[in-house]
Length: 229
Image (cartoon, rainbow, N blue to C red; front, side, top):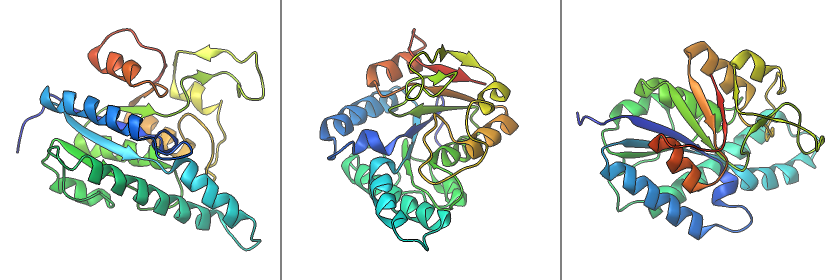
C-alpha cells in the first residue's frame, strides 16, 4: 500500500458546492487545492454534505404531516449522494478512488490519493461520517469546511453581540449546541459527531469557506477559525 504523509479528512458543506446554483468556480478551486496536496504526498478524503439541496427538499417534505425525522434524514442522504457523484465525476482525472464510498467498511479498499465519501445511515449529519472516516484512516483530526467560520458563545444570528471562541474543549462545545440531532440542524459540528470525536480524542477545525484559509491551516500558517479538542 502506498505511503502518504498524512490522510487529510475534510468535511465539505453541501451549501458551498450548491449555494443556489452549482458553484463551478468553487468546485474548480477546491480541485486545484486537492491536486496541490496530492502532488505533495498527502491522501485526501472529501466527505460531502447535502447542504441547501437537502434543506430545500426537506422543507417540501415537511409540509406533509406524516413525514418523520428519519424521512428527512434519508432525503438528506440522497442529496449527499447526488453532490458526491458530481464531485467524483468532476475530479475523475485525479488519482481518485473509482467509487463514492457509501459504507464505512468499504474504506479498506481505498489506496488512491483521493476518495469521495457520501452517506449511508440516518441519525446524524455528514460530520459524523467525517469522524468515522478519520478513525478508519487512523487520523486524529477533521477539518470542517462550511459556511460557518467560527464557534460562538451564542447563536450569532439571534444575538449580534455573540463572541467568537477560537479554542475550546469538547465539554464546552457540547454545552453550546443542541443535545439531539434533528435533520438539517444548523450547528458548526453536529452533536452526534461531536460526542464521537470527543470519545476518540479527535480535534476538529472549524474553518469557514475560504480555500486560502484552509490552505493556511494545512500549511501550518496563521488561519481564521475555531479549534475544538
